[in-house]
Amino acid sequence: MDYETLLTFQGYSRFFMILVIFIIFYSYAYSIYKRDKSGERDYEKYSNLVHDDSSVSVPLEERKKDKDIDNKEK
Picture 1 (spheres, one colour):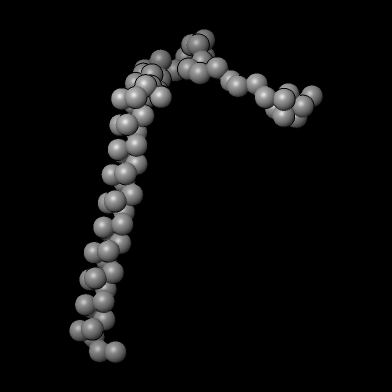
Picture 2 (picture 1 turned 135 degrees about the horizontal axis):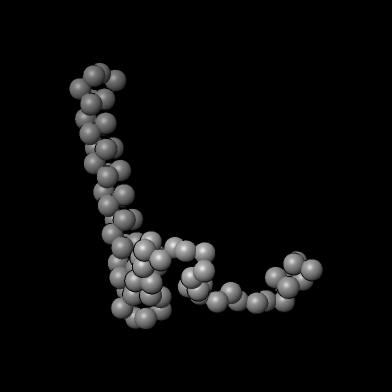
């Protein structure tokens, strides 16, 4: 394989790698946007955690208690 072919292959591989990363990032950002608009999860309270990080602040979410978790803790 000559040098020019190797450079061409490297250019195409970089382009497709950046394209895949771009698609993954924007699909993740869209899923966060969709969850926030539907009310499934409120990401604003997580961003407020940066400003209110004292040890006496209330938890953001309640823990779910399952039978498996109770058995493992005992």
